[in-house]
Image 1 (cartoon, rainbow, N blue to C red):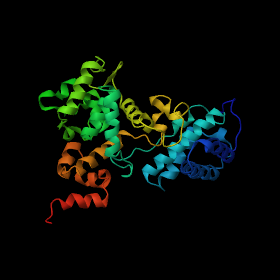
Image 2 (tube, helix red, strand yellow):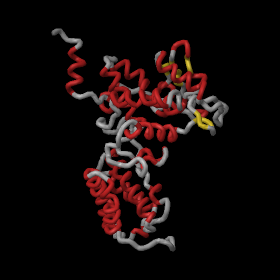
Image 3 (spheres, rainbow, N blue to C red):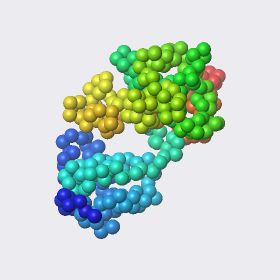
Image 4 (cartoon, one colour):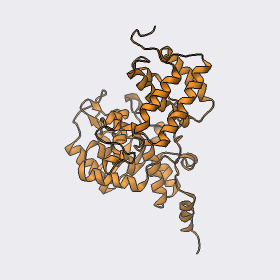
Length: 336
């Protein structure tokens, strides 16, 4: 049933008005990408003979996802649906669709490592972020989460699973344990269990976080999580938002997108940080960490065991080295 407060609006007009509203504040490439992605949505609505934004429902959006899924790669579909959500939030603001409709756009889950290999957090940038955190947010939750993800290349689900009892101070390591019965299953189950070496420098950050900034709480199963909020074990989505916020470039220098931090939507708290085009997800840290290990001369077999990823998947999805960098790595083992 229609919301009585909605105002009729033609989809093509809506997209045109939305793009006009965005034009002054985005780059040319962002504008072109949004126009192209929303063009596919308009094609779908035309095919479905929907000529009023008021008629959009969750089922409409589900059918659109199904309609596009067969034509493009999952990661491309995710990007298109991200643009669609932003558009629908704007449409809700102008009373063309119900509030909350954007949240009914559900992206397909990606297989492990399916993001494009070009989307990676480079070592130089990661080191700059770590230096900033070390100076201004030492032993904070953001610092310890970023440090662990970058140093080990572990998945966010592994970080989420860590308890205080999993710290191994004598070895400067953490013990990753699969505990599905208490809601912290590792990606690969029991086969993903392993000790992961941090080293003294990185382990010290963890110890100082525990001493100074960890909330002394238990989770719903009586366990003592490593990464906590006041409510208990930090949710994976919460950690994800911390990483997005930590990787916003304006944390350390001027915005590369010519946005004013005082008015930029991506600066409105952790919840909005992912809207920054230059922020990065935890998965890009994993890819960057694996690539950094390989560039440092760590054998792929060692990286494979350390990061709990098969060699096939490592080479296909996580190795972001350039052809020249790969050649230079091989040269070290060849006679001159």
